[in-house]
Amino acid sequence: MFHYTDRDGYNAIVSQPTWCFKAAQPPGNHPFGAYFTDLPPNTPNLAKRLGIPRRKLAYYFEFVDVGDLTPLPGQRGEHIFYSPSDYNVVKERQIGHGETGL
Amino acid sequence: MIGRSDYQLVAPPIPDLPDWIIQVCRRKWPDGVFLDANETELIPLSSPKLAWRPQSEEFFIFSDRPTAEKWDDLGPCAENWNRMLHFLWQPSKTGAPAPVTVVIDEPTPDIQALLKDLQATFREAASFAPPVAEAA
Image (tube, rainbow over all chains, first blue to last red):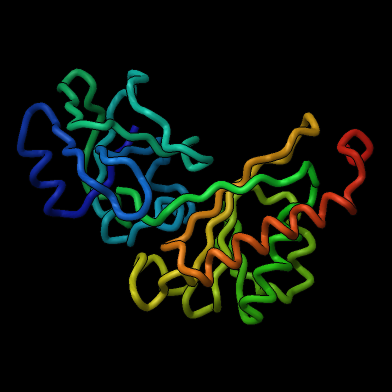
């Protein structure tokens, strides 16, 4: 599972041993939450699929999915998931993080 | 990490749904372009090449080529607000109606009219479509 963010978001999350992805109200008609996707950085048209500018894909976090995230309602829910509250990822689940090159 | 707004339509079990969507969008945006979600080539909505893409299950339609070319850099913003439509659907294998997700920026009256036009076109398309079993 992946979370994408900009530099400020990356620095805030990576500074803690347990990653904490903060829930927030996203734009549009989506539920309050922390958002994730199973689409990797090399997915074609990733910015358009997620509906965000490329600069918000500059950094990634990858972690092991344990099946506790909720699919977004509708067909984007095949690849986009959320947690309705702050979502913590302990070290044992962390796979990698860094720049995406996007 | 997510943007824009998702709306659900229901389409009859027709095999060439993207063709019908493209027809509606071409009326709204004669200079519009099509982009399959898994590809990079922008195809004008007026191009006969689009006839080869009836099975695209995820695609984008932009109002014009410059909007498409700048979208990733700008993201949703005033300059391109509601000028890109993102469609996701899956062909029905059972004959049941198929959900269609349309991702927009905001349901302005203009976009609401487009969604109504799409839904009406889907109903019209159903009257032309052969039963799924015959089409398979």
